Image (tube, rainbow, N blue to C red):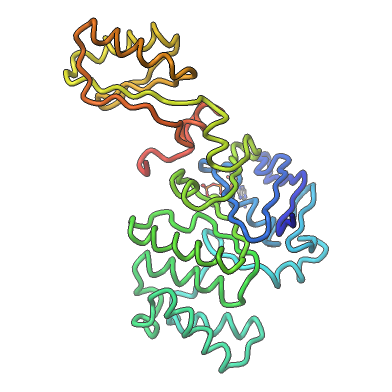
Length: 315
Ligand SMILES: Nc1ncnc2c1ncn2[C@@H]1O[C@H](COP(=O)(O)OP(=O)(O)OP(=O)(O)O)[C@@H](O)[C@H]1O
Ligand SMILES: [Mg+2]
C-alpha cells in the first residue's frame, strides 16, 4: 500500500487558536480521502499545510514522498488545489485564466491553449469560454476553479469544500468529475461539511473537530462503529408523540429525540423492535412510519462529539 499523502503530528497555531492540534493522516494513492468537520475544525488549515501553502509549527508531512516544507517545490509539482483558498482572476475570461495558469506551469502557448480548451469542454464551459469569469454563475465559477486546479495534471488534488453553496445539480455534476479523476488514478483529498458528499465520494474518512481527528475509517465502518441502528417511529396521530417517546424510553432505556412528528432513538439490539411494536399496539398507537436504519454520519458525529457536523440549513 502506498500513500500519496502522509502527515504526522501536525500542529498549526494562529495566536491563541490551535487550528491543528496533532493531526496524523494518510491518503492512499488513487483513493478519495474525505475530511469532514464543522466550521473552524481545521480542515482548510490542514489542506494549506499539505498543499505547501503554510508551514506547520510542528509535525511533518509528505506528498508523493516529498516533504511539504523541505521539498515544497517538488511536492507542489504533483499538487492541484481548488477551493476556499484558491482563486481565478475575475476580470479574465475562462480561456485566459486557464492559459495563464498553463503558462505559469511552463507549458508552451499552444500547449496551454489546447489544455484550456480541453478542460473547458470537459467542464461544460465551452460556451462561456470567452466571457469574463465575473459573469459566471456560482456553479460555473466552481467548475472553472476546479479546471484551474487540473491544468497541470496533478497526481494529488486538494478540494476544499468544492460544492459548498452549489445547487444539487451542480453538486452531483462535481461529484461525477471527482469520480472520473479517481478512475484516472488521481489521489483526492476532499474537505466537506456535507455528510452525504462524504458518504458518496470518500473511500476513507477522517472526522475533524477542534483541530483534532476524532474518528477515521471507511464511511460504513464509522457508521457501524457507533450507535448501531436507529429506529424511527411516526405516529399517524401527532398527539401521540409523547406516548411513543415514553414507550421507546421504557423499552430501550435511551432518550429518544423528537422532530417534525418523528421520534428517533438509537437501538443497540434490533430484537427490541417486536417489543416496541407490541407495546404501541397495546396502547392503540398506529404508526404511519416505522423504520429501522443504520446511523447516519451526522449521528456518528453527534455521538462522538455531542454536536452535529452539518450546518443546520444544509441538511
Ligand atoms: N490565517 C489565520 N489567522 C488566524 N486564525 C486562523 C487563520 N486561519 C484559520 N484560523 C483559525 O483556525 C481555526 C481553523 O480554521 P480552518 O479555516 O482551518 O477551519 P475549517 O475547518 O476550514 O472551517 P470552515 O468549514 O469554516 O472552512 C479557526 O478557529 C480559524 O479561525
Ligand atoms: Mg475551511
